Image (tube, rainbow, N blue to C red; front, side, top):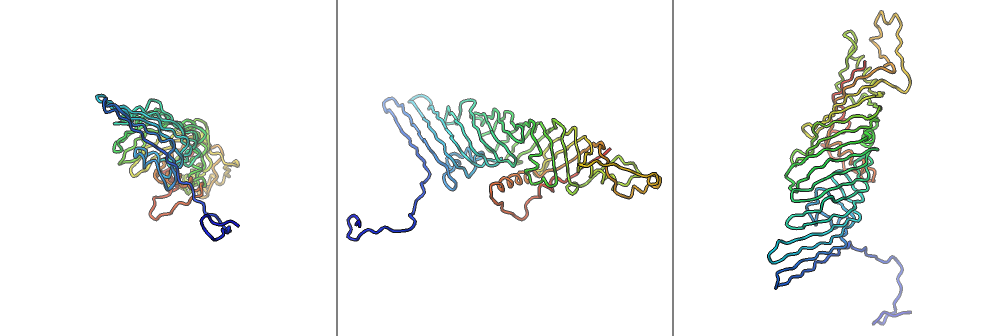
Length: 397
């Protein structure tokens, strides 16, 4: 039996759990100052080989408000920084450094980002932050409601702002990229750019939006979406265009559609009959061409004006058979008729999306995938389904 050091009572082992303290996040950094009073020359060397971010702990915005618009909480991972500031008696101070990101997960304005990696070379730390040209960062995945992977951004920073030379992300089986634009360092200034879609499957976005039970879409599109980001007005799109690069299919349940205006039946044909045929056309439409004009409206809404040409193609072939007596009496005008397979369709579909709610719904889908629950609040904007169900005009021919 052992005794306590310096004590008289024997030490008895105790059964039960042993309390273990978790290791706190590591933040190792140092600053070394050197100055020669005779020459007036000196400098500061800053070394932070490991700065670790943790949920409910240190966050990037606490170190630099500049990143707050791009890297939001919670951020988990680590970065390293090595830099210097030098001065002389008569000359202007010089500075520089290197930021290394081995891996960082965070919340971006577009959704949760995982696996941010790269290095940034700074040629100036003061009075303005400036980087060398063609800096590059990558992200393994970005959760925007649909599968988006392999984000690659090339940029540099100068006194005017963050110059985005280009960015590409793989999504919907294709790519979404941005043309060069500048994000001002002054958050009160607006900026703009162009988003370019190349062979992106829109059906993936619809399926992940929680709207797939009412709309099925197989449309691989390319196009351009010019945008402006204004601190007051928010994100707006002007004169955007999309076009299908191959034939596809569209199926919209009739309860989603409102304000139907169908023509082509003649004066003696009841409007209800033509509208019913138009609904059938929308439920099983195989298109050859599809184009869309995209423009922002007031109140955070977006107008998408589709023009689609194709044919009615239901799973089982349909025919319209009328007897001579029905043609003479015109009794067939008083009953529902099947739309024959192969009927040519020329469709104009005017939809209005609640862009804010669409983004919210996509983020909710992503959170649900991760096992998180979204708080339901009263008075929230209309659902995505309601936002889409606006002003279609259909003309089966």
